[in-house]
Length: 136
Image (cartoon, rainbow, N blue to C red; front, side, top):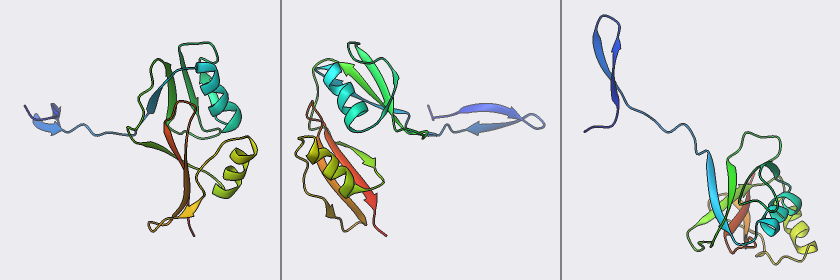
């Protein structure tokens, strides 16, 4: 059966409407320690906690001041090596220094052939994160 639904429009004419994806709403990571994960995303990366928190089984965070994708954290056994989550940031090198100053070991930032400056690092559960900014 084809995707979509028929609706009545105008003078009895049937039109098939195809549903479309409007946006990606959220990504969910499984995490071993909710407290460590919430503290990393909230306190180190500066994301806003919008639901849950330390000591809960499920939390949601988003970038401050934007209508960004929600990052959900769900207590459980993490699945790693599935891909990466890419964050656009205001200053790649400043964030890299911020993370180094807090004892993390991110890859050295580099310029990509596709026009971004970026670096990768794992979160506390080993999920690969990328922090990037368009080159001008």
